[in-house]
Length: 248
Length: 376
View 1 (cartoon, each protein chain N blue to C red):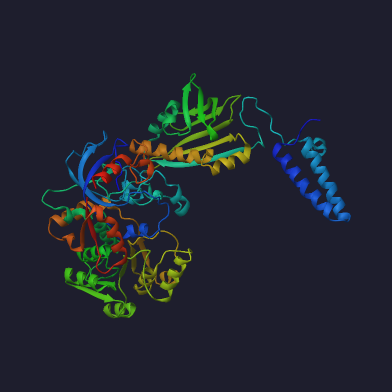
View 2: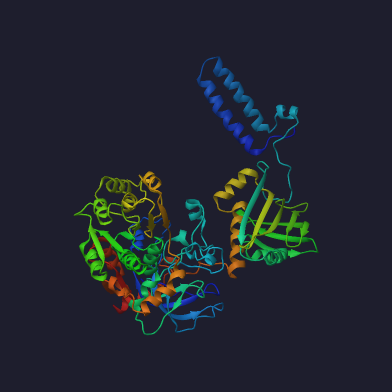
């Protein structure tokens, strides 16, 4: 029998089954019997991973497996990200810096490297939560100089993604950069949520990356604060303190 | 305690060897735990000056040996806000804006020594400090002015001045100032500098009122332990109320009226909102159509805020962290021309090693401990 229920749902089914059966047994009446039966059915679907109801309806909640992905899909889901930021530089400056994708890792913290394959195609390598790396090829689907760059990842990408970057001039405050992208979160919506909690959710990353891009373009630098002195143990100078004590 | 010396981290940094620094009333908010995102080991201090000892490759307007005073707000000089003289709103000087964005919607600039939500920059109550955007912030000083005359250009003098400027003082105006701490003292002087006909200082520490009276010929003082503020102000202004009111007290306002006690109970019960006693009074006492100017630091939410009064009287509110870079050059000129000698606010001179004691006394003995200047 082919599995058509995804893993999360299976676990939930079994857990619910346990609860219902336990509850049903305690009650010694018709309702208890019905609940126990329902629990049994849930246990069956959870254990086998197959639902006749789903089969009849022709649906499955299992994601299609990607043999290269290190993630076991829980359920698949597309996530959308939209971010705008205003940068006090000309449209042309911003467009040309961005179009040379090899520049992107300078301000996109999670990108390890980007290398051009040809005029429109490039190879991307990115860090992902929990120490994994993610790689994919992408191609430029549309480009209008000083206006927009559209892209999409190619077949076989760990995280399928596509989007558009637009460069919109303003009267007197530089350029509005607008990023709209869609990506297939590796562990679906659940993974996207978990990643958000750990501060690594792609939507958040895009916001921070754009802020770093703005800083880079407006001030030629990305502000660093790591490496500053503090009174914390990690920064302390135990040798010097010891010498002072000895002198005393 | 010993900490490592700061180093150049960005090419537009400079390292300053600190010659004089001070403790600010707003440092007490950190000391008393009102400002979140502090971590043990953070270096405090945002009022400092000294000598340039190292410059990054991107700084061409400073030389080693230059004597400078540094504004407490960090600004890049090239964003929407810096370009419009809103330096304390700089977009690029706060590398950790997430907390402030969550709290306020958008994040203000980085500040020296004022918690991680304001950038986590190591402050200047130290021997050395790293100054980002050193080609924008630090202001060079003439050799003939001694440290104590100019160190307050780092924060409190421009803060008091901006508070007065925000009042949009017109000829014949009366300006009422709540709070005779150093910012209030500078606000009073600035109000006179900007042409106020009458200035009234409100406090309950006699020493502060006396100091201001000695320093300013036309000043009227109100000790609110003796006199009802509203009545007295009404009397002083021919029944109208002051044209503008400056709240130079901020979030730790003390008082014994019911609303102040309510504030304090909430703080004790960890239900704290900012204690806005002085601000409520300012709103109540201000004339119709007047301005309430707020340099005093607020951080969170206000409770029991008489907004109806503000609406009913059509008040204008102006506030915010000081846009330092806008004011520093002209205020330095004022000092050079002898229009003001900022040294009058100093009450204690100590060494950096004595800082812990200084904080303690500054926090508890408000009457005597007005402004502490520290030398490393």
